[in-house]
Amino acid sequence: MTATILDGKTVSAALQDDIASRVASFQQETGKTPCLAAVLVGEDPASQVYVRNKERACQKVGMTSQLFRKPAEITQAELLELVAQLNQDDTVSGILVQLPLPKHLDASEVLDAIDPRKDVDCFHPSNVGLLSQGRPNFLPCTPHGVVQILKHFDLPTAGKNVVILGRSDIVGKPLALMLMQRSSETCGADYANATVTVAHSRTPNLKELTQQADILVAAIGVPKFVTADMVKPGAIVVDVGINRTDDGLCGDVDYDALLEVAGAVTPVPGGVGRLTVTMLLENTLKAAQIQAS
Ligand code: NDP
Image (cartoon, rainbow, N blue to C red; front, side, top):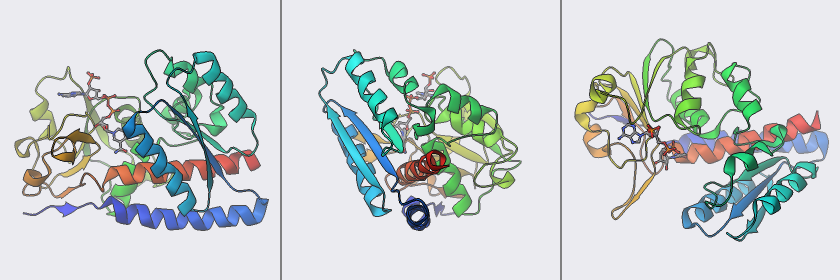
């Protein structure tokens, strides 16, 4: 068996075309252009790449972006003041504070200070609360990207056993919330209604769980952790992991080995990562629409 490769580039390109045409309509209707404000603190190389990719993606769909580069020594008060200014700025639709922040800063306090209507990462407690109740303002970018990949390749989740490795607030937990709902806001009931198991570092018998998965999502940050013997033949495997190793970028699954066992698998790079940026654009447009209404 050779698994179908779930190519994120194709999905992302199709979604970006659609976003670009909706940005153009929004501009015609309101005379305004959606704008993403990105706050980058310090010199973390990976964060610099992520922010640059996000700025380029904004340009591609006709949005504007503003980058606020701040030195690693910025104080908590100064950062909160910047967020307050961006909250007030009518030309800014969405605010993104690139994580991780330097250790002396309290990331939760900074993220909580973002106006929920501009919270395009969907980290604010009120947006997370609305998501958990199944009436989201915004969908979190990476989990939403996972759902969009499944939808594009016609791989519904309803009635399926989904096992998610990882329980972070950014990926595992919100993805579980989305897939266990009665309906996905953007993809309908077929892309919700899953029976979801969330595993983490304290889960015993991991292999027994993963072997039961119709859809296995790996989001743990351990290179090639998921091996072929952990996967049910024919299962769909979504690899969220992005790990930098001496051999280059790799995911949380042993991709080459899984090609022989899985029914479908996302590559790294070129898989979920592409979609994360695209869903950020979707949220920036939505934020602009919310503020214009
Ligand atoms: P976190 O470090 O915040 O969370 C990792 C989770 O994995 C934790 O719940 C942890 O368990 C669990 N875990 C770690 N080791 C094991 C193990 N050996 N067995 C079982 N569970 C384990 O990571 P993130 O969720 O932020 O990111 C996960 C991966 O996804 C990373 O590689 C990251 O780079 C990537 N990522 C990719 C994105 C994309 O766009 N494609 C976006 C965001 C992240 P515990 O809670 O018990 O510690």
